[in-house]
Image 1: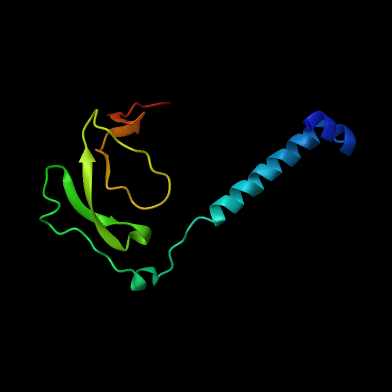
Image 2 (image 1 turned 60 degrees about the vertical axis):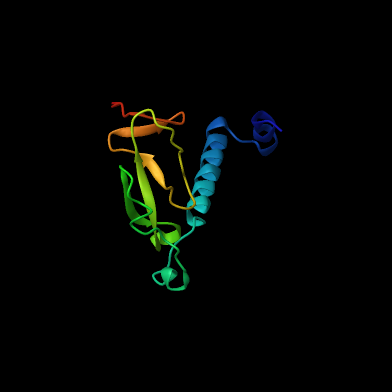
Length: 117
């Protein structure tokens, strides 16, 4: 079905149709955001962490930080230099590496951040 057919059958103007579509998109966004995983205050009480020790995380550009689900456990995090391979993460467990300050992950490589106005 196309929008012209729906507008004709429902006797809607283009503006009314656009408002309906915008409303549906807004509802979808709200539902998606509300269904993201949340962390209650006691989330870490039942988590058993097997974290890194300082011997596992002593290479240059590494440090132990809070990570994982709800930041309950510690992970060894590696700060990546320019042109190193990186991965972009949206949701899920905390990544164990990321680009250094001033860099961003673009097309799988850490590159200098460019300012856009």
